[in-house]
Length: 260
Image 1 (cartoon, rainbow, N blue to C red):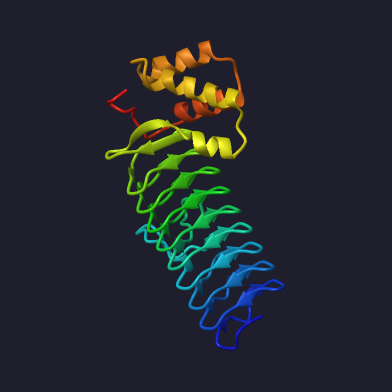
Image 2 (cartoon, helix red, strand yellow; image 1 turned 135 degrees about the horizontal axis):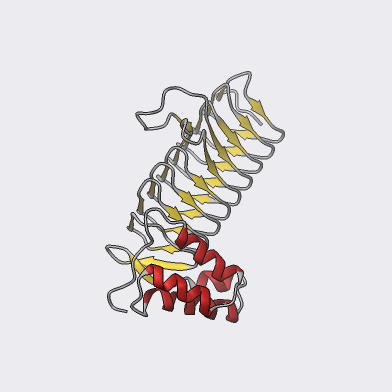
């Protein structure tokens, strides 16, 4: 159902069973897949690619021009996967020549007043809570949760199954399975509640916890901690994800708590 009060470019590609409410604006170079619902006053600009069964709430702006001085009008996209919800007044900018696209995965929830800047890569099942601000070229992996009012510095990487406290200022890479909080932010333990909700076994949880004890509580620098983890723990998906993330971090990972 397309409201006659919506402004829809005739060349926009709109799938079946798409609901477009009054006062929506949809520009020419837009693709919206089947079953998506666009609520009143949402603005879908050139370069938007929206998957099936998404919900775009009032005041959201998808595929806005990047707030980046190196942007020179190149053709880029802002891509949203299936079954993702974009709440009120969220802004998602399209990419620049750096990566060419901004990507939000499937089954994500981007809450009201959040901003996702150019060239970010947000994977599946991610929750970004109200008024969080994600700077350019940030990578956020599956099942990460960024609580309300957080600020994430450009080029930061946030790994899988992470939980970040509201109001955090994130300027270092956040390794997988961790719980991050305080001000300035530090490692506060592993995200036990999230892991159990997602079916991790006791053995997996204990392994992850023990690896982070080696990393953060044995008084080792990161280089020595990595060597210990490689030699003291058998290869596993959990161990290898942690090791590979730390080794590939350019910004450095978040520090441990001084209380530990």
